[in-house]
Image 1 (tube, rainbow, N blue to C red):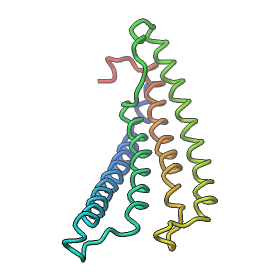
Image 2 (image 1 turned 135 degrees about the vertical axis):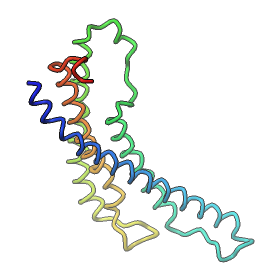
Image 3 (image 1 turned 30 degrees about the vertical axis):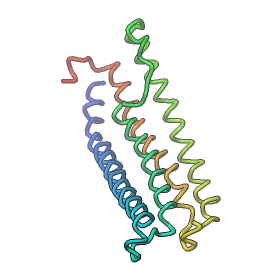
Length: 179
């Protein structure tokens, strides 16, 4: 079985690249979010002194859309890092085998949530989102407002596959062999 894990460990680069891409997208969206918000606030506060500086009508909708992308994509990143809130108070009282099994059960539940988010989110984005438009930008479909849900679902699926693999691998590969 360890030869299987040695072969499968080569896929880790794909997970690393997915992590980097999602993190990069989150950083770009955060920069855009802060820039647009700063410009909008400056436009509201300084409009009487600098008449050319106006708050764009679309700023609030774009900022909220960027925030929704950042929120769900960063939650997917937290899966990869294992930094979601988790109840660990009783872990020291449970056998290590029980903790591993509970981790796998948790991974399966989150994987299922990712599948639901990808499937249902895509349906919402293409149907409900495809019918609506932003109020301040009637040329832009609301698809982009609903799209973060299936996108995060796919990222969650990818990162949960890695987590499940690592938890299953821990049954076959001893702690000393990992190093």
